[in-house]
Length: 137
Ligand SMILES: CC(C)(COP(=O)(O)OP(=O)(O)OC[C@H]1O[C@@H](n2cnc3c(N)ncnc32)[C@H](O)[C@@H]1OP(=O)(O)O)[C@@H](O)C(=O)NCCC(=O)NCCS
Image (tube, rainbow, N blue to C red):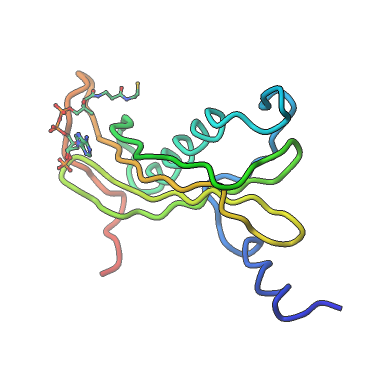
């Protein structure tokens, strides 16, 4: 029987991740767990996707703050990357990413990261952020 707790734990099905992926054998190390660097590259990609919802400008990654892996990910598991914008500066946008893996109808936190991206012009110099729309106050 489905309990209320089970239903609550299914909230990963209704949240909107920037990316949801299934990891493949090519992504593993020799112990069968997923390379941290693979997750790291998806974190950066998720951030870029979230930023592209806010601006059409060219952006580069400036900062990926300390990433600690707390929960293992294995081949075939579904991993979701949830992003939240934390700051819109003059030329930069910062965001937080939660990486979660689904196991037995439960979402487990694999890692978290804080990233900063900078808008750049054609010469690679910082330029002011131009949002596609103003965020709600
Ligand atoms: C990003 C880059 C253009 C910034 O140039 P810069 O001369 O340092 O410019 P600034 O010091 O004015 O910083 C630009 C913005 O980035 C932010 N920033 C710079 N360094 C930062 C850091 N260590 N942490 C957080 N934010 C940082 C600044 O706060 C500023 O944001 P704001 O205008 O909203 O306040 C330059 O460092 C660069 O080209 N880096 C390489 C980026 C890249 O190629 N990334 C891909 C990985 S290979």
